[in-house]
Image (tube, rainbow, N blue to C red; front, side, top):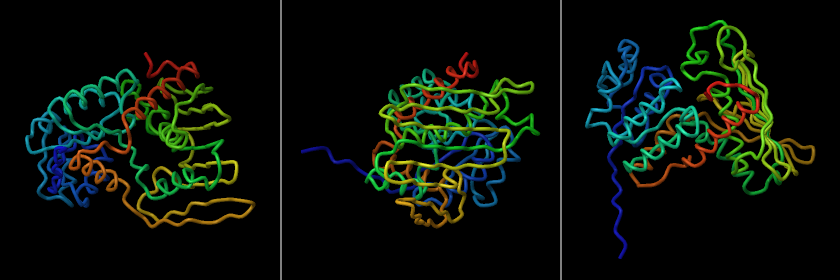
Length: 336
C-alpha cells in the first residue's frame, strides 16, 4: 500500500522580504485576499514604507531587517522582491532556513547562480518558484490552450514587446548596474518566458543588439531574434526609453492570436483576438488579480506536495537565454 499523503487545509503563513512597491502594494494585498494564505510579517529597513500594509492587514508584524523574516518560526513561505543582484543571497538564506520561496523574476543574474539556488532548494526539500504572475492570468492560460489544441496551427512566429520610459529617473534601481538592472533583465524576460511557454524549448541561436546610453552600463533597450528551430522564431524588444507599451502576437500557420496587454493587465477586463481566414473574433476576460492567482497556486503546491507550474528547469533555461542574448549583443553586463 502506498503511503497516504496528508493535505493540510490551514492557510500558508507568508513573510515578505523588502518594502518594494510590488511587494507592499501588489503581493501583500493579494496574500490577504487569497483563499489559502495570509501575510504574517514584512521585513524592511524602510519600516515606514512597510507599514503601508496596515491599511489592509492591521495585524501584520513589521520587522526592521530581512534576517528577522527568515528567523521567524511562524513564517512558512517567503516572497522576495529585492533588486536582481540580491535575489540569490536572500533566497538561499531563506531556503537554508527551511522556508519555501517565491522569488521575483528573473530568479538570478546568471544560470550558474540560478543552479546554486535550485540545488539549495532541493537539499532543503522546500519549494522555489520564479514569480511570473502573468502566467496565471486567464488570458494566458486560454492562449496556451488554443495553441496546444491547434486552433491557429503550428506556431512559427511570436512577437512580444514591453517598454516604459524611466530615463528621467536616474536613481531607479532598474538603471543601476550594481543591482543588475537593464531592460532585458526587468521586462525583456517576459517575452523570453512567453516564447518558452509556447515552444517548450530553448532557442538554438540568438541575434541581438542592445542600446546603452548615459552614465549607466545597463541596456536601455534590447532587441533580439531567437531561432527555435524548425522555422520557429521569437522576436522581442524591451526598453526603458520608449512610451509605456506591451503586446504579443502569436502567429501560427492557420491563424493569429493577438494579446494587447499580455504581461501586466492589472485588474481590468481584457480582450484577446483570434484572426483566421481573414475573420477576427474576440475572447473577453473579466478583470482578476493575477498576483492573487500566483500566490494561491504556490500555497496550494505547498499544502498538496506538488511541484509548481513554473518549473525550475524552465527557469534555468530562460536564464541561459538571457545570457545568450547579452553575449550575442556583445554586452558585458550582467555577465562579468
